[in-house]
Length: 273
Ligand code: KIV
Picture (cartoon, rainbow, N blue to C red):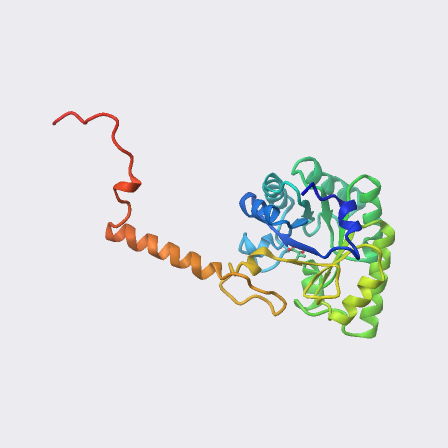
């Protein structure tokens, strides 16, 4: 498989469903890439999956640059998208261009993601006009969790659906190459998907979208709590890893590890004492 570009992602609409994943490190990005994920998002969900925060709000540019660079080193064919953290693109278009540019220049990302619709029109235009491809993100916006009053399903009233359609039109016109649509009912996701020429990549938004994206830790069952209703957990790594760590600790304590098989042969006989 050749390298995924933003043009290939756009061209997938109507032809091929896009199964995308998040990743935060070199090793798992490499596995996602080898499995055929067309797009790997270094999500600011990093805050929860990897850094132990309860929201994405404390995640910094330096955190995101560090992890994006690791993912970019692991991903060969996938398009690597860096999530711009809270306050890195909201203050001015100048700051947005400078910060987004750092992801491409210093971390090896192919594109960036920002949250918001109509309100981000100027920002998306400024980035794309300066050669920085943008993945939009509408619906549930985790960086606005305090304003939204929690991690809630969006698009449940006529006005909310109209706003989502306006957001979709604004982002499409501003030049995004695809849009993440988070946590809206499936019929509304269908309307939004039909309303734009760019792929709509759903998370918790049903099957009508042009693709899906899930947080890698959720599908692998790495967390200690059951994931959200919309996640299909393909493995329970949490219990497998806990079991493996437990066995290792027991074997070191009992002396059954290491054995001679795990030790190096001496190259020379030790002199007698
Ligand atoms: O931060 C993230 O991982 C995301 C995805 C859930 C789309 O924004």
